Length: 580
Image (tube, rainbow, N blue to C red):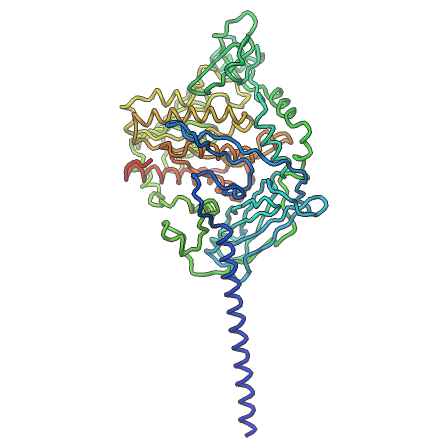
């Protein structure tokens, strides 16, 4: 009887433990499901928005902005949406990164490989009070330092009440480091939005009218004759005018008339760095404090620095049908663009992975001519594609070093041409006649040249200091040229590569070449060229999350991963036929 009692006690105690464990499992399951349901309600938006135009308080797929360009309802056929800017709220309380914090919303038990991780940022002021408005510009990344070198960029949503939601995609398991960085507080964004993008001109070039066109003569020329800038066409009286309705719209490149020389003898231009810097600094009068180290690019320290991602059954998405199984956020604007793993980028936006090895890419590009029209980031493509394809021999021809050149790879009968856009912000002395607007280049291509042509456009890195209106004019005129080109060459693949962040070596570069402005340039490009027969390649997250310092010229690993995405799209189009 006594033995029975002992066994009965053990049995009852065991049953009690089992019941307790069941209750804990049910509780964790309910918490996870409740968190997922709340997250779903927050991010689900059934309202239909044009691609690139996001609803208020959900303003950017990577980082919060208050200046997402919005299309006007009365758009003209053939031109596309006319980009305008939302008038921002005046911010009376400034976000201070020292007192701002973030917290993990997703329960630790629910953080598994293949899931989304929800973090909330609280922007706080100097007095440690919650900022009553939004408008800050944030970077959010998650990474691991183990041998896999995995990393990704988070999705940030501005709720316009001082709080921001961040969504990370957990593509790997193990310990991960969270990095939430305040790039610009709301007052700095207010200045760039309301003042800097409306103030001009801010870029000035020096020009010489001497008849010197050879490299040896250019190197000997130390003296310039006059100053030049870009202004509205109706403000050009008393100046030498160099208009291009096709390239600049209703803006004109003008120079102060030189003494004893005719306007048509303009020969060499180079940016006037000192005058450009002075005008850029002058534009920020009264706002300089918001770009000092106290506010600029400051990582938040109040919040979980690391998290643990549990392993689970996982496979990366290969089509849109996989999205439900992986519990991806239903709204396009909140989806991660991809992640780095073993120094290889896996895209969650572009899923054509049928062209990943060198031999397939070679066969796809055989007998093709690739025309790259852009800035120095496009030049990196031209200089890296031979290495990517393992092409050893090339014939190099150049009109001017680093700005206008062509490489021929005879083993594939494949060639790459690169041309820099006009009005470059460089102190290099360049003959003015060599600059041709991209719209004019597209118009000059005749029908019989279309058969084996591939085109990439990427004019962004030198444009952050332009006024918003002049930049919009330039992009709209390029879109019109694309439309004319499509009538002659409907099957030519055209890619436009978006912007990415860069280095800021001086204080004034923090607003003159701000990542905020560069991000806005990328949004503007994507919006204006939407439904124009151009494929927009978004590389912002890829560059932001790569484990190295930001630079306008990113490491070759990043450049080649960009090229792989571009070639995958090009080859898919060439195999299956062009689709606008």
